[in-house]
Length: 427
Image (cartoon, rainbow, N blue to C red; front, top):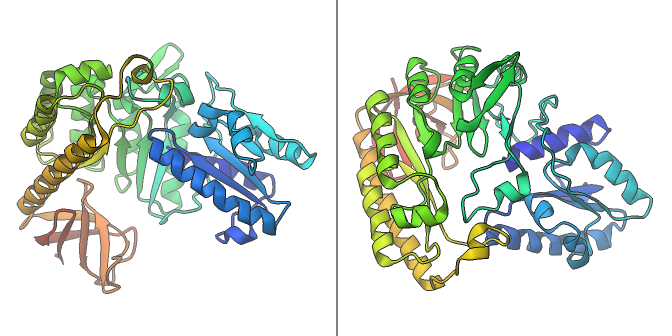
């Protein structure tokens, strides 16, 4: 989401005559787009701001701004704590950046952290300033109303609101005409997408189908799904279209019903596993990934082992794994004690990571001998004699370069693998 937001900001500023530079020393304005999901992310921002001090000493006219979730969470407190900052703008305030910059030019600090019930930036064509020219993100909705106990997103991004269908289709068509061959539809919970027009509702499954019909050569991905909202209708829609990727990210967070209840996730492990069964039944060969948090408030060894057990049952292809980081003003921070020692959180996280590496290795081993259609993204990082891309299951595939260029679809037969990569030859 932050990457997509940065592209929107770039578009707004380009309209006012600014241009992007890859050399930070040449910049007249520097914006740092932030995340507040974990404390570690905010600490990295603080370190980055320390670096801004040295840049300002070299260029006293340099304008430094902080954008996004951290700006929304801390607001004017940041101006007091970080003297280097000139602008604070929340995620719904990007259109106001030109005015805020004028305020700074007149000698004042500038802040806008007002959240909006309508802002979706639907009319802004994002600048794809750091893209491979093949894959792009399309933000289809903003905000969240799930209020998971550990999560700060509803407080810093506001209530859910969806973009109109026509603007999403138009952006998809424009991207395809400009050579892009893959789009990822983004939302805090894409399953909640809902657009009303003339009394007719378009849900996410219907939107996905409409985007898939833009062109059969345009691959479609999406993130992120909430387990309580993943419908059979959506899974069936994916099964009907070859260009909707057979990969679903379904965050579980914990394998313990007790912890899921404390997290306010809205489902049980049994309900989650039924969704997994539906995916396996309707979409054979679909890759499934997840998010897992270790060491949430009051998590016991039994709870932790329940998570490991659920991971084994599902057999995830890959996962994003974190230790619990308390975020201020969330339900957990206000009502629970962060009472699992850091060393235990770390040990449990290590066990989760080790298990996932084993599961990824096992899943990739099963792909040996299979042939996948791979969308070429560019040269392999390790060798200019090899090219790399992803298959429908979102797995990285590396194979010898045979004259193919980014954007080509190539059938690759898998002969070798690691826990992170499939290797083979074009056929």
